[in-house]
Image (cartoon, rainbow, N blue to C red; front, side, top):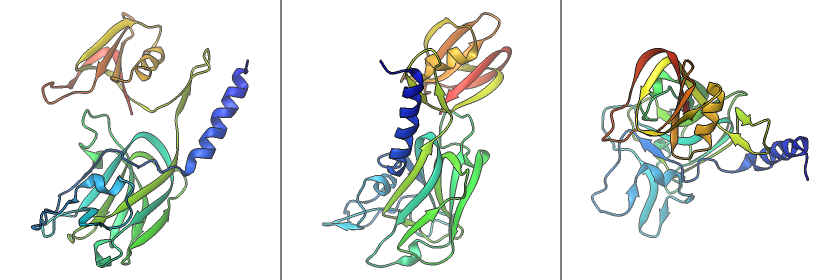
Length: 264
């Protein structure tokens, strides 16, 4: 049987081996606006930038994320990596048939979001790490982020109001804030965003008794439907809560004895 020490070494080795995996592939995305071509060909949605297709045109379809022109705002595109990473490399593929001006004058930002139910809300209130500024026109660019560039969301944002076009983005990074259970061989990689002195109104999944808030948070980590762990240090009650939906109004309320941890 492997010792816990060996298992820990294997985990570290695995992280290094897979650090070049594209962690953006098929992850949730959004952008400031969507171009709707008159011709009606398949085009332009934000998820096309993480679908694994690098060419702009595939057959009759234009498989690139494309913001609407002339919408009088700084266009942007963002991907939720669904975990917190130390970002190393970012590869951005633009159109190669024309229009290098669609990929110029933009910032690459890595964002650690605030504790909100909707991951896209209030991105500018999170911790923003500036990875790169691209001043010149480009069709393909490889970016090395500075050391300690970490976060969950990567956003590409132009400094002007010209439309933004991204055919594919590939992101390489290592997960951080690993939480290893000392009494088991299992390994969990997560990031918990805490709000102390508050309770959380949201859909309840289950309740149980826990010795401390860390144990409560671990239970949330092992429950795939759990989005938040609420711990009452007075009663030792651990309440696991799910993601809010359109029909569920979620909010905080002050409570001296409660701690809430959102699983990022």
